[in-house]
Image 1: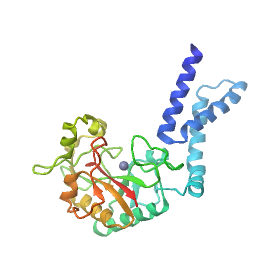
Image 2: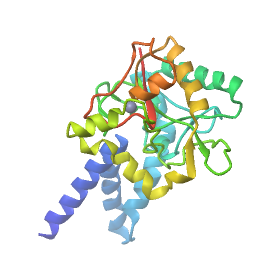
Image 3: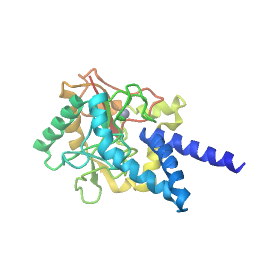
Image 4: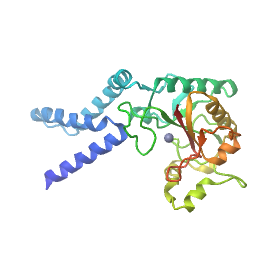
Length: 276
Ligand SMILES: [Zn+2]
């Protein structure tokens, strides 16, 4: 029975690490193997966890990027090297969820630089992009982040009291702070909920645990500018955003900007952009 629970625990951990980071499950197995050798000499509590952390970090920083580049034509989005284009949370980089095709990186850097002309100091903050390896490999819980050609970019917010623009989204993971439909605008989220898709706002529940929505107001000026730059860039194909925002930002002429299906998560907290 003890062995059964041990195998079950490791299988669960392997699955979770693979889902979250693509390479974490394999590195966990390697850590267990190395741990067995080390423990033969002397028992050290927590050694397998320490081996995993060191191996995972070294692999993520030094091994994954060159292999992704030369074998799968994917490069990591900047973690700290470009102040105009940064992760909303560094965890996206540490979990290897920040890989894209080189042409996609170039286009995103161009948009981030163009943002500086009108709003100096405004960072384009990205969340989930793609894993480094294997075309078609899914990046959960997303449906279209499988080929190095998709990215989620968060919206801009302001401090409700002072009106000061915030550098990053108040939501620690960048998702879940809604720029809801205003009176008179078409509310696609309500339409989807009426169809029975009650779960589409689960990101908002997670966000509400960490930040109080009432303290912030949506920065339509900066977000509108970012959306116009994204819409006008020739490298981008399908773009997903909630219909009321497409209309609010005057983007109706762009047929590649569409609403996601009702069974997908809401897109009035971020925009999903795909490379052509
Ligand atoms: Zn997406």
